[in-house]
Length: 124
Length: 124
Image (cartoon, rainbow over all chains, first blue to last red; front, side, top):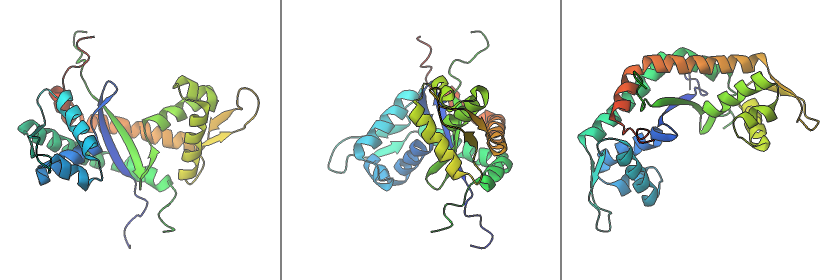
C-alpha cells in the first residue's frame, strides 16, 4: 500500500534471567489472552497453542516471578477459569511499555536494518 | 557481590521480517565470531555450535539481506576462511547499537521487571 514499507522488520523482546526466558512475545500474548478470555485454554487456542503448552507457560511464569501472575481454578471440560493477578497485570503492562519504549528509541536502527533486508513479501 | 543485583534480567532482541528472524543474539554473536576468527567453523565452535548449524545461519543471513554479510571460501580441513563484508560489518554494528539503545531507553522497565523476578541464582 502507498506509504507503507512492506519490509519493515518487527522487533521482538525477550527478558531473560540466566538462561530462562522470563517474558517474551509468546508469554505476553498468553497473559493478554488470559486477561481477555478468562481462560488459559481459550487464550492458548487464540494462539494455536495446545492446552498443555499454555499451562506449561503459565506454570513457568508463576514460578519465575515472586508473586504468581495467573490465578486459575482447574476443572470442567472448559478447563476452569483464570485471571491475571495484580502482579500479572503489572508485568504485562511493563512488558508492553518496554516494547513501545524500545520501538521508539530504536526506530533509527530498526529502519536502517529494515532497509538492508530483502523484500521477501514483495512477490506475494 | 556487593553492589551487584544478581537477578538483573538481560534483554534480548530479535529483528523479525514476517516470521523469520533477520538477526538476533545468536546470529549477531556468530557474525562477531567470524569477524574475530576469520572462520565460520571457529566462530561456531566458540558458541558450541555445530559447523553445519553455523553454515545454515550464515546462509540464512546472506539470503535475507540484500547484500551478503559473510564472504567465505570453502575448502581444506579447517573449512576455509570467511570474512564479514562491509554490509556484514554494518549490520553487526547496527544490531549492537540497537542493543545499547534499547538497554538504556528501557532501563526503567527492565529494572522494575527484574525486581519482580525470583532470585533463582541466589541459592547457587
